[in-house]
Amino acid sequence: MNARNALIAVALAFGGWEAIDVVDTGVPAAVFSVLFLAAAVWLARRSSRLAALLVALLCSVEASQAHTWKDAGQTAKDTAMVLGSAGILAALAFVAPRIHVKGATR
Image (cartoon, rainbow, N blue to C red; front, side, top):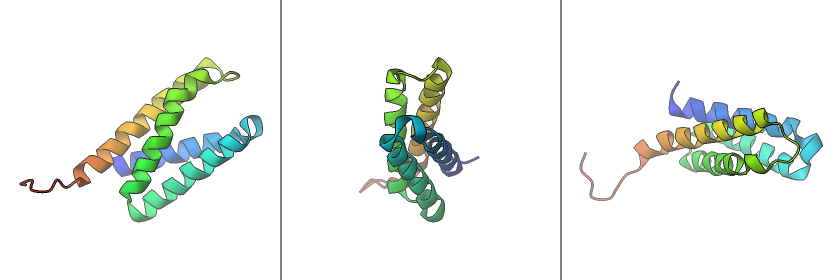
């Protein structure tokens, strides 16, 4: 599995998880679900660096805020932190080879 496919998988996993959580959390979960799913589709269709950065940003919010969830179990919090960290790493692995530094030699 390459970085792009891993990032799409993480975005789809979080998008689905947030969609299921809309009943308990409300509007914030709906917004995050739409953003994750839209970024996954955008990344799958265009291989966009901007979409990868959006997923990384959303994953960083999920990973950093999971410990503050009041009604979530410890397993859900740990899963969100691990999956969010994996999403950040996959986004970095996807974006890093595509960065072109001006004046750099190959």
